Figure 1 (cartoon, one colour):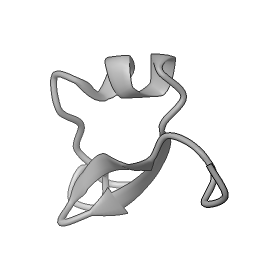
Figure 2: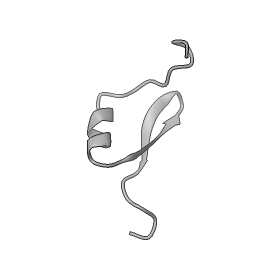
Figure 3: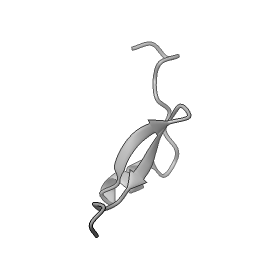
Figure 4: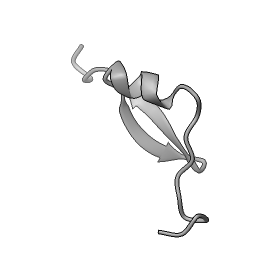
Length: 40
């Protein structure tokens, strides 16, 4: 994967992951999309 194709992260990415967020690429960044399942 080249630098151009790489997904960027924010300063809070590691915190989101530690809190159990489901992450997905959005607008070139790895962003949290949810923290629990839909039934909760």
